[in-house]
Each structure stands twice: as structure tokens, then as C-alpha cells.
Image (cartoon, rainbow, N blue to C red; front, side, top):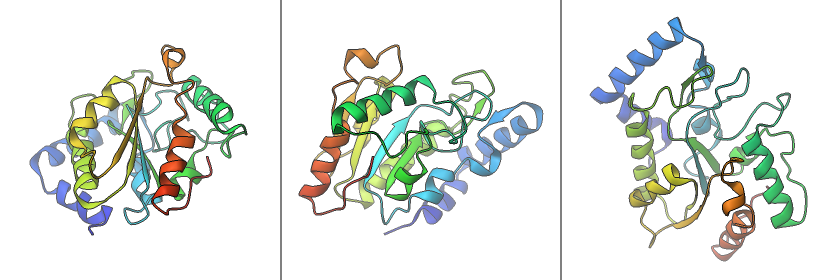
Length: 216
């Protein structure tokens, strides 16, 4: 099985990626961009392909100061939990009848247990959500999803919100598991994220395929 390093190296050779990285490097020089440059690919550093169990897809990084750390939905523990994270923790509490192991909003421990916290766009300009839409990140992350689909089995994809759910077309449901819901943002959480029970469902699936459950 390929590892992330090989997969990313293959992407780096492609014309779209060369242009993307030139654009991104220039933007880091001229604007305030999140996350820190060295954390762009952090999700792949913390979750090995070999240990991968779950993929949670976000949209793009948090655009407030100090929030983004290269993991979808996650923030450093000293940062106040953003509204989406508050709702994720609320659903875990209701679903599992206990508090999350990540009440401080830092999801690093999930990543180390095999949960890939992947945004479809990996960078953003300060205070400008989706500002790096259509630079090329979507091609890269689509190719990552295709690689997971083709080279892994029984991966559980948690797709929250319309943009994430649209990635279902890249995933073979005969080989993998897809759980969908509205986004946990305050704008939509009450329309079905609360009560989706994705965390207990994920652990039930993991048990059924003889894998260790996630300590959410």
C-alpha cells in the first residue's frame, strides 16, 4: 500500500500542483494565511495511511487568528472553541452520554487514533472564508480521497454538509462506509447534525470489522 509521502510526491509532479504551490507561497509572502505554512499537510503527518480508519471532511481552515492548525475542525487547546466545534462536542455528549476526550477543541488525539481530519481546501486568507477556493486544493484533496477509496477497505467517511456530501461520488460504498449529515455549524446543526449519532455509529462499524474504536 502507498503511504501519504508517495501519494503527495506523485501529486507534486503534476502541473496543477506546481502552480498551486507557487500561488500559495506567494500568498504567504503578501497576506496573512492560515494555518502556518509548516502545518498545511499536518493531517497527513499525524494519521498514517496504514492506520487510517475514519475520514472527517471539512471545508477550509478556520480564518481567525491562531485557530487553524492543519486539522479540520480542530483548534489549539488555548483557543476558544469555535461554534462548529461546540456543536460537535454537544453531539458527542448526547450520543455517547459522556464528555468528549477533546473538550478543549484540540483533535490531535483523534488524528493519532486513525481519524484523518481533512479539509477540502488546505489554506485560507485571514478573515476571508473560502478565499482559496479553486486554486487547486480541491483537485489535490479529491485525489487523496480517490487514493483512499482505491487502496484501503472499510474506511468510514463522515460527510457533514453539502460540499462534503458531494464527495460521495468518489467513494465506493461497497468497499467503504459513508455517514452523512448537515454541517455542525450553528446555521444548520439543528436540522439534523444533532441526533445524527455518527460517533456511536462509527464505533459500532469499527467493532463489526474488528478494529479498535475511537475515543471521541
